[in-house]
Structure formats: structure tokens, C-alpha cells
Amino acid sequence: MRRYAALCALAVAACTTLGPDYRAPDAAGLAVPETYYGEGAPPAPRADLSRWWETFDDPLLTRLIDVASAGNFDLAVAAARLTQAREALVQARAGLVPTVGAGGSASRSVGAGNDRTSFNLGADASWEIDLFGRIRRGIEAAGADAEAAWFDREALRVAIAAEVATNYIEARLAQARLALARDTLAIADDNLQIAQWRVQAGLVSSLDSEQARATRAQTAASIPNLETAFASATYRLAVLTGRAPGALTAELSAPQPIPEGPEPIAVGIPADTLRQRPDVRRAERNLAAATARIGVAEAQLYPGLRLSGSIGTAAFSLGGLFEAITGSILAGIDQTLFDGGRLRSQLRSQQAATEGALASYRQSVLTALEDVENALLALRAARERQAQFRIAFEAANNTAIIARTQYRAGLTDFQTLLEAERSLLSARDGIANSEGDEARALVQLYRALGGGWDPMATGTTT
Image (cartoon, rainbow, N blue to C red; front, side):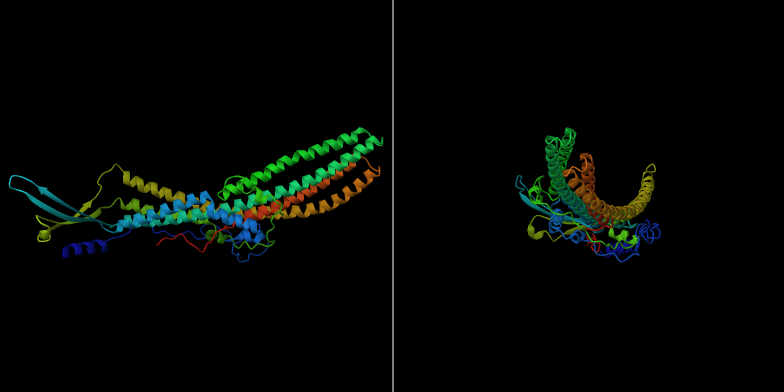
């Protein structure tokens, strides 16, 4: 046994780890700029975005996102994949320790004057000495895979929170536009009645009443599409929260204003993207796993050392089992001498996979920066449009009031009234759409910044 222990100690001391040691690329190596191109103000420290939806100050929106985070089935699938990845890490770690088995048997032979019972007990163990780090690199890769699976789940959590918020905004925007369409329909009914009275009085031709009837019908035709848009948004919200379509329609039927977010948003600096976006961190962990697997492939080119041993005893009675114990120790080395270049091809293949993982990581960083820039641009454009639509609404509202008064008094024609009403409708609809665009752009920005999860948490398993 002393020789066996000495052999084990010598083997462990001789172990080395092949393959490159992973170093995560830094922001400078990834060509990350110091500031966002579309951010006008000097960069400020980024605020906590883990629960950004609370900045909209809408309790129902907050509750829906919390329910979706707990009950969404896509998240349940991602959680199951995370469990699988963590169990794969446990299995990889098991390669560092010996495998031990035991067995026993009892038999009785019956013959002419030769009846006897025999008992056997035995145990065996085997242990692969990780001479060149194949197992250790495999553990490193499995650990990175587990962390990547955790970031994958968190990236999905971010996406689901943004999708819930977007569909909630769509539902409230459809309600606002629906209320506007119904108000416009009431005005069209009033205009049609006035036109018909004036035609009956012989003050105008039937052209006025026909134009009023056509305008009224066109306004009424827009209502079913808006009702469909509202219903579709509520159906999607129900599915996102793990319920059947229609489960939330009644709850959302009471009209509420389009959610308004905060005016200033501290987006921080682009380097924050490397730690804030879970999809970027997932790509980085995939790169780490691919790098570790180079060591696994390289270690396959070198000899493998396996120690095995067994111990056993046999007797014709239970009391005599431990009187005579036998055992054996075996050390074996295996080395592939010729395989047609298969192992070296596997190494080159893994090196190419690592290069691809690095390119994918770089691309994920650039895509994240692009998402932020596009969201900043969309937010600024929505706010500028909203300001102009409010000016247009004020002017169009005054024009419509004057035109309606003059038409009632017979001082202007119906065409002038129709144009004024169309301008007013366009301005009101523009305000509603720009409010929805602003809210959606805010959600887009929060998602682009990686909000919706806790970046201080990690997927590391112990």
C-alpha cells in the first residue's frame, strides 16, 4: 500500500494542464468606445435597472411582469436547461475522484456427501490520473457552460419583461386610439345630421350629406381594427404570463393612460454593456468554454494513466470471511500511436471553434452597442414628434372649432369643415402614437442597456 500511495503522489505531482489559460478580452481589445454616439449629455453613472418597469409607476404593469417572470413557460424551459448544465458540471467533477464498486455472493452446492456453502466479498476501484489536465479542462468547460446557461436564462428574463411591457403599451395605445375613434365618430354623426338638415332646408346640395356619410363610414371602419389590436395585445400578455389567451382581456378592459417613463435616463458608458447585458456575458462564457476544450482536445494526444485495484475474500462460513484477504494493484498507460490524424484534427477543429466563439463575442458586444444607439435615437425622435404634434393639435383644434361654427352659420362650405376635422383627427392620433412610440422606445432602451435582471448575481456553481 505504501508503494501504491507513493505512485499516486508521484503521478499527481507530475500533472500538468495543457491548452491556453483563458483571459477575458477587455473593453479596449473589443474596440468599445468611451461614450455613446447618440448620448448628448456627459455620461453619468448608470442607475439600477434590475426593475426598470417600476419607473413607469403603473402597478398593473409591474404585477404582469412579476407574474411573467414566475410563470412564463419559456423561462421554465431555460431553467431546466440550466439544471442540466449544472448536473453536467457535477458529472465532470466526478472524473477527479476514484470510482469504487463492491459486490458479494453466496452459493450452496449440493452433492453426494459434499454439501457446502461458500461466501465471497470483493471491492474494486479505478482512478484515472489527470496527467495532462484533460479532466480539469473538461471541468473548466462544463463550469463555463453552466454559467452560460444561467446568463441565457437571464437574457430571456430581460426579453420577456420587455415584451410584456411592449404589449401592455400596445394595449393602452389601442384603447387611446379607440377612444379617439369613437369621439371622432360622434363628431361625424353630428356633422352628418347638420348636413342632412341643411340639405332638407335647401341651403346646400346633397353633396354635403354624401360627403358627411362617407366620412362617418370611414371613421366607423377603423374601430374594428383597433378593437382587434387591443384584443391581440391582451392575448399575448396572457400567454407571456403563462395563461390562456383571453385570461387578461377583462382585467385590462378598463381604459388607462399610456405609461409614461422618466424623462432623464442615465445610460452610463458603453463599457457597462460588458457586464450589464446577460446575452453578452453568455457569449463571453461560451468563449471561455471553447477555450478550455482546446486543452481537452490537446490532452488526448498524450498518454493516459489509470490505476486500478481490487480486494476480496472467500470462505465457507461467514465467520471465516476475513481470515484470508487478497488484493491486487494495477497501473496502466495507454497512448494512441496512429489514428489517421483524427485527434489532431479534433484539436484544430476546437481551435477553429474558439476563434468562432471569439468572433461571436465581439459581434454580441457591437450588437449591444447598436441596440443602445438605436434606442436613444428612437426615444429622441419620439419626443420631438410628440412636441410637434401638440403644436399641430392646438392649431387644428382652433381651426376645427371655427370651421364648425362657420358651417353651422352657413359661412363656409362642408369641404372646409371636413379638412379641419381631418387635421384635428391626424394631430390627436399623432399625439397618441408618439406617446406610444416614446414608451416603446423607453422599453427598447431599458432592454438594450440590459435592464431586467440583477447583474451582481452570478451563475457560478460551487
